[in-house]
Length: 413
Image (tube, rainbow, N blue to C red):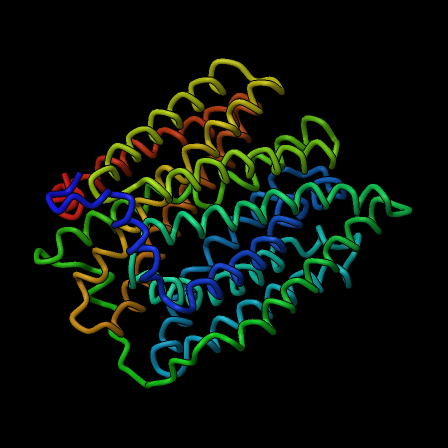
């Protein structure tokens, strides 16, 4: 009980009331994006594998995606700074629609164009996230960041719960598997276009400003916290992007069932929804370190299980532990990162430079881990894949050790 006798929960409610007026719009747009992404992201890999039976081809598709995205992200950040972030946000949504339109045109020839399609998705992702991260930073900078990210994570995971359950139904009810996948990609295209239309409600930010990324990209001695966050982003890469598509692909390869693959994705989303809601409601600055520590232990347990044995039930338990760990780590980490950016910038509009700079080491980590994944699976087959999953989990230990050294975490204890 505080000295004035007011219950602690009232302080939390006051913080919630201070959320940015456009926070609900940001959450709604992210929900639409994740509905479309969850409908198809796992099933793109399944579609390419069903047609080609080439695991390495799919890995190269994603390697090109993650290798190209940061360069586009920085270019899009420059455009946001000089012109308008809303243009970038809308262009990213539109290009995601174009990506799925390409599958409708190429159909069974899609594996022949897996590399160019990966490049197209890398461009779309780089542009979209440059706009979306800037928008999220702006709305999260007012009020309670942990609460905002809790709602954002729970809502996007709710979208990721519904979509994988719907996707197998669409594929199963279609006269043929190919047509089912094409209907799925067509639905994703429609959702992206709906998000594009809704994005016109985002407030414009068209003031022209200089774009100088060097200070953010190469932090000096006076930016110790930001240097630690940049180093941590290299180790963070796998969990952010590689796990979702990889686990879905492994489930599909193990079962040859779109229904089980979609159900597996929905199960992971359900676990994340529950944990995200609890984490967003109760994480405060002084509990961030504890939350991240629990997440690291859960990931290490998951990685050890998959290294010890591999079967369907172990894969399900692995997915549950990973899904619980993600919001426990991501929610406090995002809040910490945004607070450090806010302390590092000399002017508020420099946030874009820091958001863009953070993507460079993140992409480096993704490329390194995907390269290791391709090499391990090529030389050691299934056991190599299990080693790669363990390494992706174990890397979070280094992320934790770097993030907790920041002054934002130490001063909150």
